[in-house]
Structure formats: C-alpha cells, structure tokens
Amino acid sequence: MSSVSGPPRPGARAHDELLSRELGVRQLAAVIFNYTVGSGIFVLPAVVAAQLGAAAILAYLVCAFIMALSVLCFAEAGSRVSASGGPYAYVETAFGPLLGFVAGVLNLLSAVAAAAAVASVFAASAAALIGTSSVVVQALLMATVLVAAGTINVRSVGGGARLVEIAVVAKLVPLVLFVLVGAAFVRGDYLSWDTSPQLLPVLSSTGLLIFAFLGIEGALQPSGEVHAPSRTVPRAVFLAMGGVVALYISIQIVAQGLLGPALPNDRVAPLAEAAATIVGPPGRTFLLIGATVSMFGFLCGTVLTGPRSLFAFAKNRLAPRQLAAVHPSRRTPHIAIGTYVAIALGLALSGSFEDLLILTNFSGLLVYIGVALAAWELRRRDVRSHGEPFVVPGGPLVPVLTCLIIIGVIVATVSLIEVAAVGGVIALAVAGYLVRVNRGD
Image 1 (cartoon, rainbow, N blue to C red):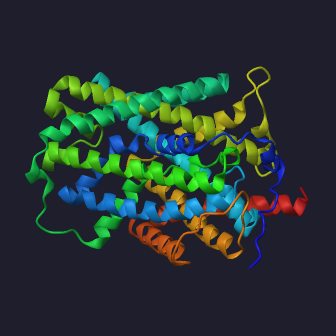
Image 2 (image 1 turned 30 degrees about the vertical axis):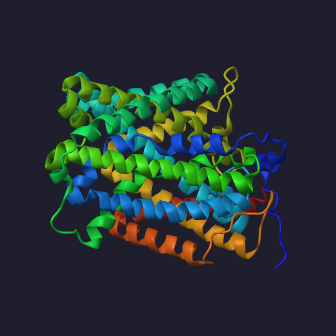
Image 3 (image 1 turned 180 degrees about the horizontal axis):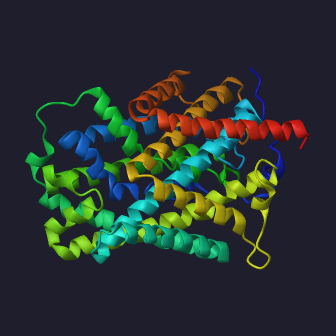
C-alpha cells in the first residue's frame, strides 16, 4: 500500500508549516500532564468511594485501561497527522471536514461543561474555606470566578498563561505532599473489601471518574508545533499518562486509607478532610487553598483556550461572525471569551457537579471514539506527515476495543437527557456546517 500525506487543511490551519516546531518530548509531556491533572482529583475520590467503597480502586484501574487504549490511538493518530487542532485534525484528515467539525464542537462542549463543573466545585471549596454553605454565596462565587477568569484573559493572553503556570505548582505540591506524608498513616483494614462489586456499578463509577483523566484531547491541539511528531507524540503521551495514573491511584489509596468508610461523607473537599486526620486544621486549610487555587488556574486555562474554538468557528463562518471580533486595544477575542464565560456560568448555575461531569465526559468520550476510529482509518490509508509513524500492534484490535469499552461506560452512565442534549448539539453542528457549504463559503 502506497503512503499518502494528510491533505492540507483550510483556513489558518493551512499555515502550520510556518509554525516553529519547538515542543519536544519533555515539553509536550509536561503540557499533557498539566492539562490532565486538574481539579477533579480533589473531589472525585469521595464520589467514587460513595458508589464502590474500598473497591473504588477498581474504577481507577478501568479508567487506566481505557486511557491506555486511548493513548495508543492518540499516539498513532498524532504521529501521522502533525497539523494543529489535535482530535479535530485527526478526525478531519481521516473522515473529512464535516466529521472533523463535529469532533471540534464536541471538544468545545466538553470543555465548557468542564468549566461549569469546576466553577461549581470552586464555589463549594471556597465557601468551605470561608466557613459558609450558603447557596447564594456559592452562586456569587461561581459568577465571580468565571467573570474574573474572563476578565484576565480579555486583558491579555499572557496574564491567563501566567496564572496557569502558578496553578501547576499550586496543585502538584499539595497532592504530592498528601501522598508522601499520608502514606505513613494509612490503615490497611480501610483498603480491603469483602465482596467485589458488579460490573455495572464499576462502569458507572468509571463514567464519573474519567473526568479526572480527560485532557489529552486538549493538550495535543498544538500538534503543529511539535518537533519530530512521529517520535515525540507517542513518547510524550505514554510518559505523561503513566505519571497521571500513578499519581491518581496513590491519592485514592491514601485518601481511602486515612478516612475509610468516612471518605464519601465529604463531597466538597475529601482530600482536605483526609489531611486533617494527619496534621489537624492546618492540613485541611492547606489542601483547601491548594484545591481552590488549582481550580482557579484551571478556569483561567480553559477560558484561555476554549473561546479560541468559538473564534475559529466564527472566522470560518460556522458561528455568528460577532464571535470573531478582536478587542481594539487588547487584541484578544473578547466577544468569544464573554460568550464562553456566559455559557459556562449558565451551566454551572443550572446543573449539579455530577450532572455536569456526565455531560463533560459523554462529549469527551465521543471525541475519544472519533480518534480511535481515525487512528484506524489513517493507518489503513497509510497517512503520514513527518517520519515513520508509530503503529499500534494488533491491527484493528486496539481501536475496536477502545470504542467498545467506552460505549459500555457511556451506556452505564449517561441518561436520555444527556443523550438528547449532546445529540441536539451534534444536530446543530451538522446543520450549521451544511448551511455554510450550501452558501458556498
């Protein structure tokens, strides 16, 4: 079979060859790790323990298996398509611009729903820090943090990026200290369980927990700036996701080993409560501050990157043209940022954390299915761009297995309401694209 190159992509993406390819294995792995380790891990240990008890570690292992399969697909697709856009580029190159656009819209939906979920947890965590549980105060905190993140990013791109860098340290330091110090106080009897849970509860818990593992789909968007992508992308994704899995499993074991059956009792700041069992109130405050700063950094990051999708869609006439406006003095897409913040705030105020998690995960997992199928198609057509691509062993086995397991998680987790909501977004995306094509844009 003769090799073919990926087709040039329209619009700004056609200029990928002008970009400086400076991201190596270490830099790209750091980007993926930072993008993946967000705020979910500060809360989800209690959510999963509520469903599975001490057997919660099983959900982590299923997530790790899903991510291992998905990472193989991302690694192959990323080694074959080096254009900017990540999943958008992979699906578009494999299946054409319509499905590529749908993948981009689903990626955007997952991001904005994640922003809403994190804003709701930020409000609860900040309220706990100041000693209140008022619903009104939490709503005001949601609005304040999202507007603040939007304002920072409207003022300058650099300001939002600097806060993200600060958040990296703010979230990793307390998490690593929690594991290292807490490991000495773990009770072995808190980690054992008498009967194994059935498959459906494990898959249902996995459907919530997967939120903490998502992120590679966004981190690979600057693929057009990766040096030697056929070598760098596979190595970076394996390195980063291996570190993420090790950190998460360690956190769950320590949290479960410190709190035992009491772990599910605190759905706002379970790690802070676990830290309090070791060093008292200062430990709780330390973890709460770390979680709050981390969540704010995540929101600044998603408000930095997410609105750029709206901006790009508008430039390509796939969204209202007002979203392509640029601030006359700040040179930032202020209308797109404001719209993104408004949508996230509306979702945060209208949905619970777990409902928003399901919406985030459902749309994100559909993107993962798209990438798995794209990896298979790209290999079948022997698409390659820079150097010899990474090839997943086993032929179609890994992409097919990835899709089947993800579908199982979706069926066990997603309700008809979420299916209707995401299905409506997909229908609008397809309709918008067809209108653009029929107009000859």
